[in-house]
Image (cartoon, rainbow over all chains, first blue to last red; front, side):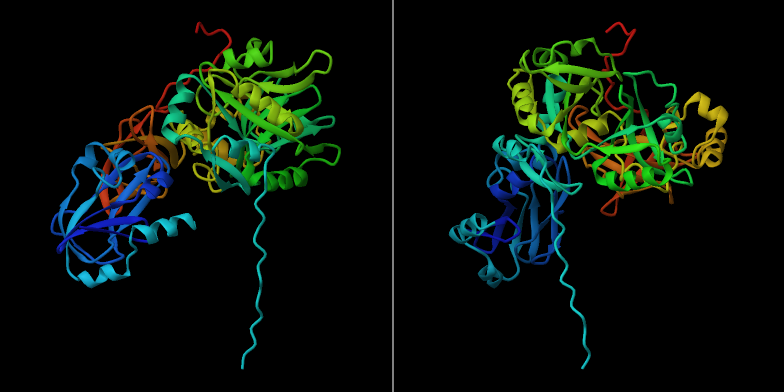
Length: 123
Length: 382
């Protein structure tokens, strides 16, 4: 399994042609207390860079973008009852959705962990 | 070949307030607000909000404009632009009021205190320059406006604010809600007078302290050294005032809104209702007797999804209002909102819907405040 990152602070962990998507530790620290998360419905078709989910802090609503194109297999229902999972375990239990990738070559444009760390350090 | 002139716009300089470095030392995340670098949060909005409701929070509100109006007849002259009974204010008493434009639209909300020197007026940071221009234009030349830029303004808010502040500034516990006075602070050999009021914008008991900028850091350190006190950012200030049902100028009020629409009829004093003589009096007094066409109301929100500023409000297919402030309310444990709703749909209990990202969410007109006020009122038993 390989984990990739976007400049919009999503992570995507790829296992064959399916993947799990969430927001990074850096993203949750910038957002602050998460009070609501809206995940995509199973079967929804996502386009790379398009709106995929919504995460709301006390202050504001933010979009979560699809790191790659694909079809949603599952949204994380646990976020509805406990949106703070995104704060407490953003890169684990606080995942947003799982998808099947429609074009694995889209992964080529994403960053690996080392590149993402350098990207965040430069912000 | 066409020649186009290129304009290099100078970036507008974001200014620093006296406690800028102090906030950064305390771990604040700074944002631009009202033209200044301001702390949005320290440890987190939720924790800071709850801490203020249960103990005491120190807010830096030095971006706000502190004005002193002096000269004979300042109160009477100011009454041309505000609907409150300012000339009846006794020394050491303060009043919430609204600055009106010529049509009775709200240019700002403000606190007016009868101080020994004159009228001490605190206005919102984002519009303070416009306010001063409006005041200068309409006040007689004999009235002097002193913008006290050399002073910082701190707010200490919460049920334990009095316990903490009276250790630092003895005697402040004698003040009741909406009273103010001068208090000595510091070494007995060289005390510094502070102007302190028992007021604030969180719905809790608390104080607002005007201090010379040069002493702001020392005072903030002394207050924060009290075990009840933590520094609190603008984020929690916003969620606290929303729960308290207090409007935020520029969001819940603007020049298109009159005081009656803004549900601020209480700010139109009895004598002024009888006598008029303020900007927009005809429009405002008519709205007072006939009822406003729309009104600022509280809205409780079903479910967990926040409903925020700009969301339209519907009764069936018809849009009957708009949200002007909304978010998650930490002390309520649910989203809440305020907004303008048309007459016929704005009575408490009215069931409406707001639209968020194309989806309808049930909202109910609810009485304000969402969280009861805990002011230290004179004559109250608590």
